[in-house]
Each structure stands twice: as structure tokens, then as C-alpha cells.
Length: 501
Image (tube, rainbow, N blue to C red; front, side, top):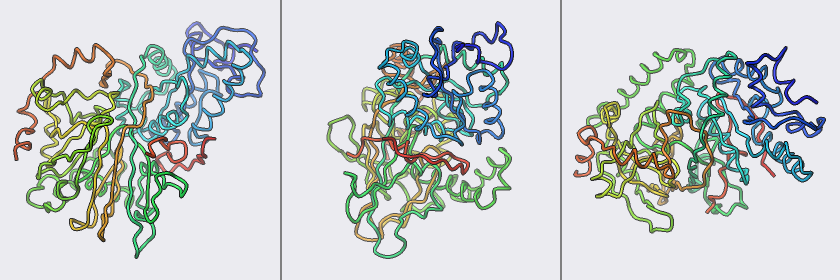
């Protein structure tokens, strides 16, 4: 079997010879295929996952181009096969081949890189699967921006715009993947627990109201150590952010309106206009006049944080004017804005705040009063109200404030019922583990282990006049991410995702 001859359709010119750097032979991908006995190992072997439903027709076009340039068997359509099944099969075969001292298989496993093309939900799904597999040498992941928000690819230098799908563009992207550096990213586990109601529906959240991101939530089984009799307990995870309050409420209204009238949401400018109108209607631009104070974060919940691993829980004081709170992992929110910014040396010394590193085991907690406060992000060095950095954070909701609030994970909102009886709803976020990403230049994400990142941030100071922050200041179940069993594709794509053995 010729290792390189199947890399393209038709004759192989000098330009496409470079694609042998990425080519994986059949017998690595298909255990029953004929074994390669000669040939050099590719310098950058890749396995490609593409959501064919993302980016209009772009997903299908990308699949076609990648399959023309590489081995068809190393390019997977996520609407046809789930990544946990693919990677489980691949790594089982790696172990089998390594036991027979197959040097080619050993080298390919050592150098393997993954590419995922889709929205943030698709990328998060693959990252969760890689996290769950707990591989000794997990492959790093490059993301192709094929969704709407594209916060993950934007954070790591892969851009926000949907890519071209021709051969030249794909070859260029593969070259960038080959030259990209590895960077770890924290993942965050979330537990949500509430008492089973004595009256009314059994499910605390109506199934039809569950957004795609809440498929990350998995109702724990009776045998799970997190299970508490008489309670609903959900578990899941996220890579970018968790938010609660008025921003999530506006997002929920937008998503609900789009579900009711999908024909009105086919134009990006129209969508943005509708979003702004809903924000105005909900009081996000005039919160002090129309928004009841009972729905401010300080009235809704008691917030506790654990600043460092092993430290004590302490209550986090939330300014009474804060109506939206964001727990942020990446320096990209709401289309690429950075709510945390870079704390000045005064803030570092007075409040023990650091730059937002993506691999330091800390999540940044930021507050906003209203949409006008949020517009501060558009100013140079603008940021929200920095509340804390934490290794764990817990929200406790008690009876007496309001019947519900709004939450969202990585852009997908839901309406969360709050206690009607003498009980507590608890949402707890904690650091889980890390997965390796591939970072391209310019990369917005910064690593605590990169000396250049530390040097860069030590010379940056924010402009407090753009933040309004001082005014505000004045006035165990965490073992599995859950992606293999519970993450689902957006766009109503149904995929059978079974548990890994």
C-alpha cells in the first residue's frame, strides 16, 4: 500500500505533495485495513471533524475539499458519526499497533492534531470528548470558525469570519495548524441542584425550553455520588462562560422569538436590530427605571467563592446595582469583547487580581449594571466591574425574591425556576481539568506558563476612567466533563452519542 498515493484525487503535483505531511493511512483509521509496511511518518497527521450543518453550505463544502486533499477516512461529518466513537476506535487501534511495535503508528499518535469546524457548541463538544477520554498524550485541537459567535477560534487566533472552502484556503489553514503552538485551556464543571417539587411537573425545566447548551447538563443517576434523594441534580461543563441576570434574559427572549418566528431571523443585521429592541423592551438600556431591584444579583442570590484550591469559602459582596454577572474563562465574550481587561498594577496590589490567563485554574467574575455599562467594553481598555477571580464559585438561591431568573452557558440561555418553598437552588462552578488547544498568531489567549505573556501583561495598565468600576465598588462529582454522553450538535442535528466504556 502506498502511503502517499491516496492523498488526492488525480495526479499529485508538487504543490499537493505537501499534503503528505498530514496524511494518515487507512490501517491506522480502519483496524481491518491492509497494513502499511513502508513509508515515512507524516510530520503533522490530522483527524478532521466538520459539522456539515454549520455555516450554511460551508460545512458540506469543507468536507468535500478536505476529502479531496486528504484520506477520506480521516475526515468525519459530525452529523454522521460522533467524535467519541471515532476517537475511542482510533486510540484502541493505536494501543493494539503499539503492542506490536508499529513505529509508524507510534509516531502518528505522538504527532496527531485534531481539527474541528463548526460553531462554539461543536468545538466544545469535541473538547469535552477529548477531556473525558483522559488520554496520556491528548491531541491538541485547532478550531475552524464556522458558527455565529466563534468565541473559541477567535480566542486562539483562528479568526471570527467563516472560512473559504477552496483547496488553496484549506492548504493554507493546514499550514497554520502545522506551525501552531500548543496551549492548555481550563475546563469548568457545573452542578445544579434543586428539590423535586411536590406539585406541578416533575421536570424543573420544561424539556422544550432546554437550549442546546443545556444538553451539556446530564441528570445524574441514582448511583452517582452527586445524587441526593428528593432533589434534581444536573451536571455539565463549559469552556467559555456562564452568565446570569438581565443579559441572559434578553438572550432568552431573543432565542424564544426566533423559535416562534424563524422566518424573521435570516438576516444578520435584522437579528441584531431585533436583539437591541428586545433589550430596550426588557429594560436592559434603562434598568434603573424599569427593572425591579428584586431581580438584581445581590437580591437574587448569595454568592460564595473559593479563591484558590484548598482555601476556605467566603461570601462575595455584590454591589446592589449589578444586574448581570459573568463567570468568564476566555478573553472573548459577546462577539470578541473582553469584560475583564487587564488590571492595573494598583488593582493587582490592592485586590490580588491578575491578568485573565486561560490555564491558571481561575475563572474571572465580572458584573454589569446595564447595557450602557456593557458598552464600556467598546472603549480602549474598557471592562466591566471586576468582582473576583476564583477556583470555585457557588450561587445559592432562596425563596422570597422572585419565581425565576435567567442563565446561559456559552451563549445559550434558559429560564431557571427558583424556590417556591423553604428550600435552596444551588449552582456551583469548579475547575475540572485542562485540554490542549492549538494557538495561531495573533492569539488573544494568554498562558500563565508563557514568559512573554507575563512580560506583556506586566507592562499593560487599564484606564479606570473607562470602567466605572470604582463607583460600583464604592456604592465531588467533578470527575467527568460529560461531553461524550451529553453534548449534542446545534441546529437540531440528532446524533446517537453512547457512553465510552
